[in-house]
Image (tube, rainbow, N blue to C red; front, side):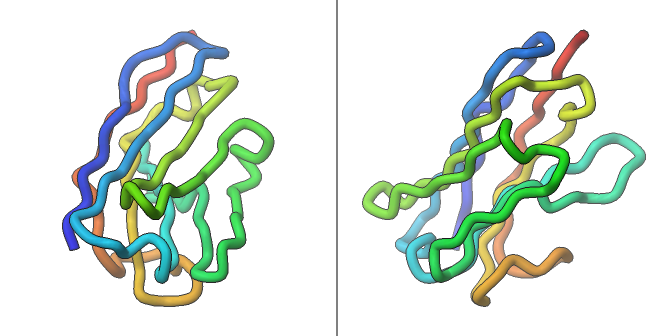
Length: 120
């Protein structure tokens, strides 16, 4: 499956962005899907994911600010990011894995990454 991420950009602290990830096929409804991010000099971090059963999970650092969702009819995954902080600056990657949950690591299919920059 091919994934195409979009929606990144530059915003000021407190701003919002919505990331999108379009898939080439109907994969989001039956697999675990998620968003990861990687800041310069840091390891890739799992930000949010939806299990194959539809349950959402978030990293503590984004709880209450980010919302992950999917539109199965459009084969698209979203990440709504509100109240953005400079520490949210990173390249964001969408990911789908043929497993019940997203497992951190180089597994499954990945989008190309979209840059999010938050300035103070």
